[in-house]
Image (cartoon, rainbow, N blue to C red; front, side, top):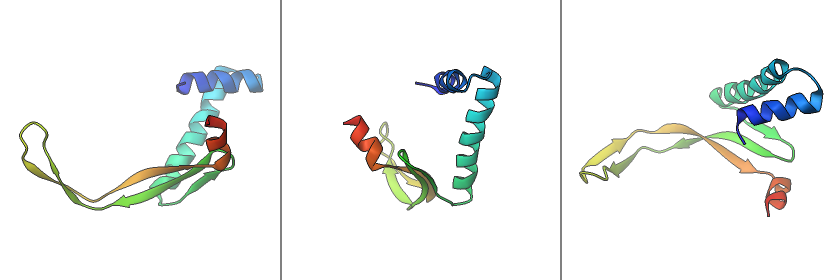
Length: 90
């Protein structure tokens, strides 16, 4: 499933236009992104928790040459699925 399929599902459920549904989906996604950029956490009941995790700097290897390279510390998004989602996927 991709974004367009989600937009079509929302439009079908709400009975509105695809443009309105796309705006709604974009609003949800952008709200999650903005909250994560600020270092916050987004919890959606039944789905899970989106958060930001700090990854330490590390040394990695270039697979072609074997040369060591430094990977800087960075923030990465993290998702912890809710119990309901885990049970539904089983």
